[in-house]
Length: 344
Image 1 (cartoon, rainbow, N blue to C red):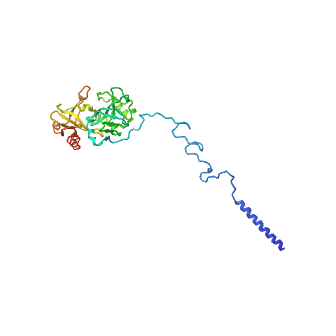
Image 2: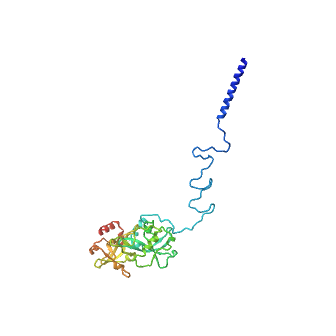
Image 3: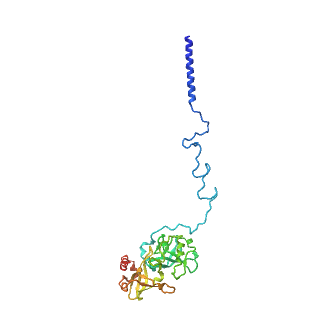
């Protein structure tokens, strides 16, 4: 009896052990077949799948097309011919560059600037600055008149009109030693450039609008123009530099005071300070502020001789700062004295 009881106990233990083993096997996860990826927790995409590129419709693994290009895949891009007029404007500057610095005083004389060579940005000759257009009431050089080289294909006998601001606020350079004006322009940008005939009547100024419109494509063109900033409507008191360098100055009673020999200016901006006038009586030169002179309307009529009238009493001319020679006008202290004297 005891032997059967022992056998029963052993059988019970064996059955319990088998049941535990079966329970452990049923609790293990099923094994995934080889090659099937498990799902990603955060994006619900299989971990072996590449996410498509954002904002493109390209199939997975394909290269996205280049933006703003119509070139077929694998084809060489088309090369267009460079348009010399389609360039960025020159670097902006506040004033013209001066070279060499120690010779700046030479550049303050209008007479010295006539005849300078005009160069492109690579130092090649574009022409000769044979004259300038001066706004005498605003007291600025407004335009350079350039006699062009033949390679620019400008009509024969024409002078190219270039804003002086192409020098001052467009990183141009004045070289007193080489007698050159270098512009940040290329020859191709002069195709169809505005022109004047030498000695052409400057008023009416219907030539100016097209000239400004042309150059605005290539350089910065500011507010300086031929019109005077005065009340009562547009007034034009413009003249050629070569005219002013020999113009007669009269008082209000049409009495001759003297003849202009030169004018002193700030080359960096083109603004004038004073005329150097040889008195009708006496030696030396009298310094007269350009701002206290006027060109009479009748002197601007076709065929008329240019003249100036002093907008002050004749005694003011007699007592004005006086120098023995033109180079003495380079002195800064004297220039300040002239401005103070004329109140301008």
